[in-house]
Image (cartoon, rainbow, N blue to C red; front, side):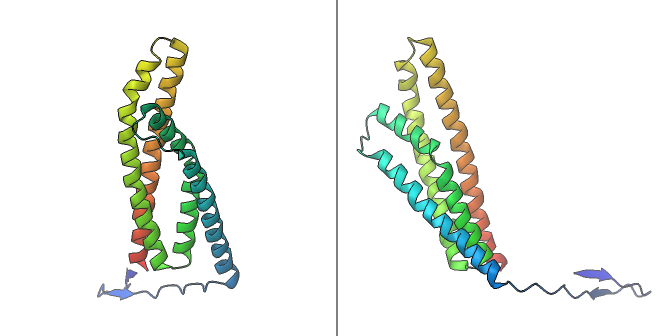
Length: 172
């Protein structure tokens, strides 16, 4: 950091930076534990989502609507898991791991965009199928609104995580 010297010449002088604290073994172990927790949560939650997709029925609008709603409803834990893992990798200075996580988050953004488009194609049919019953129609509209909010939120989180993970690699 440069500061102005108090002499009359007004020259810029380099001020020595404060020495960085060395990372202790306990801190490194704690970040590794956070990373392992993220891995376990990711495996379990993605397995749960994967089992919810079986049996596949692409082309069936009712199945697509329910499947995407289910994925969005259950996506909080996988998101938290990937952020735990990304935070652990950044804190431990693992550049390759942080790049892999940033790339994975970028892929998830693309998958979420595709799912959002697929969901948008199923909305008119879903609304038409419940238009005869006002109570169910209201519930359907609330479910669609919730899915939209979740989709936008997850997209924002994954874009932020991908950018942050990628930038952390350059900062070190």
